[in-house]
Amino acid sequence: MENEIRAVLVPVEEDRKLLLPNAMVAEVMSLRDLEPYENVDEWVLGKVTWRGWDLPVVDFAVLTGGKKIERLDKSFNVAVLKCINTPEKLAYFAVLSRGIPKLQVVSRGDMQLHEDKTINHNAIASLVSIHEETADIPNMNYLEQSLIVVTQ
Image 1: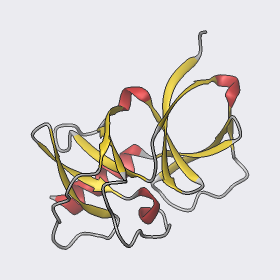
Image 2: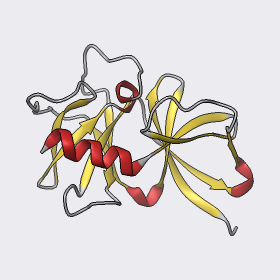
Image 3: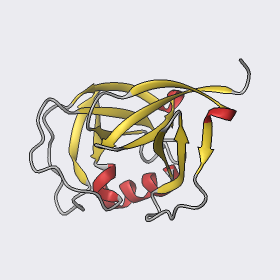
């Protein structure tokens, strides 16, 4: 059907997901050992090696005011995302997934924008509903620029 996109819903909190175009998600993998960064904000959990790249791992929930996980283990996943704005400075990064990301086919009529809800952080571009699930659409420009600043 035309006007459909393949998207991925990444659980970032128990009742909260990120909605990303499938083309932006390079891979989903189990969380591996994280190497810490020094002097970074708590929403940057560390870095993980993926295909020869050292990728910063973002806890989107903590970045946007959610609860920090006290103990990370290998039951968590990460979604490796392609950077779209400044790939020459940061080609990829990973987002912590508190569950298994789900592939979702979304048509124009399936998605409802929540214009009446207040967005509480610059990292969130929009709030939407898809098939009775709510999701955040991230502000990738803000997220990528923030990662470049704190990790380099």
